[in-house]
Length: 429
Image (cartoon, rainbow, N blue to C red; front, side, top):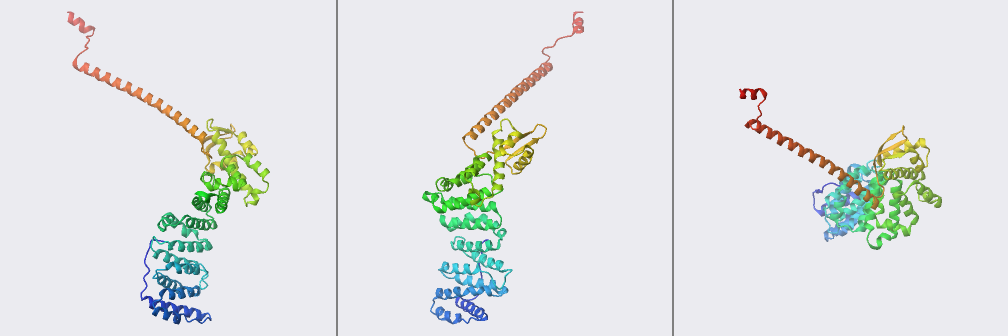
């Protein structure tokens, strides 16, 4: 996999190494019954200094390397990589090399994927860190990883993706292509959350001008919408609804946009109404009705818990009505919504209520800001009261200490002395 840049060292002049590789390729072809004379074809080209022409023939013939013995595969491919890197026109040869490496290694059906990835990683790491050729090599790596569902080997390197794109100065179309490729790899590996996040990154490259309402933006937006709705862990849709391309669905795909709005801010009853008026929409979009119903029920509990935040309690009967379920199933659903992290609280079977400790707002708008402001004012008033009590007690403490000090000083100086009765009688006598 891609790692810090390094250097590939192979001894010999360019002409000697080309001749060596040509002999090797001729040998592989001859072993398969295909007589080739590659060495003889490139010899005059090398003598005339036509290095790129010689490389074209070598690269074109290099597809036969997939049949090279496993122990020789990497060495032969690295030799080819070394040779093409001597050309000022490297990008002419890279697509063919990458395409060849993406094909099955017939000589090693079990280790072929690892061998191809090792060669591509070497190619990636020996290119300059600012070379946009790395972009095309990375796409080839993604194709191989997707075919092998080996996403875990790629994931640690994805933290470098943004810095790589910046160094390569890729335009938005190329960035989007790469984000989609990463999303595809993650999705095939079952990493749904990663797949969704990279689709969002791809969508963010389509937010300027007419691109947000283009056919590509619409298709990608619907794909992101489906991923968000289908994910069992995705309950926050604000990142999605904030995108211009998603808002453009109001016109291009109003049914899809209405469904998203239900899951963004509405309740189970709204979803039921939607299905009644759009009978086949959910199934036609490849969405699972049971999964969506479960999700909207959890979101409904979150909404009614947030709206009951002042009273801090929800009766079982209110929850059962909102979820359209029997009262005996309420506790199961509340436990599920707590596990999902949407609310925190405590169930009371004795009182038939759910005591809310914390609730999550699905949409944070003007009303929610007002509530936050109100709570901050209450908190400020409480703090002011506490500070006033502390200040009063501090003043009393200071006064007491000052009085004790004065009393001590008076006692020490004899001021304020008052003789008792026996002392007064003695004085009189």
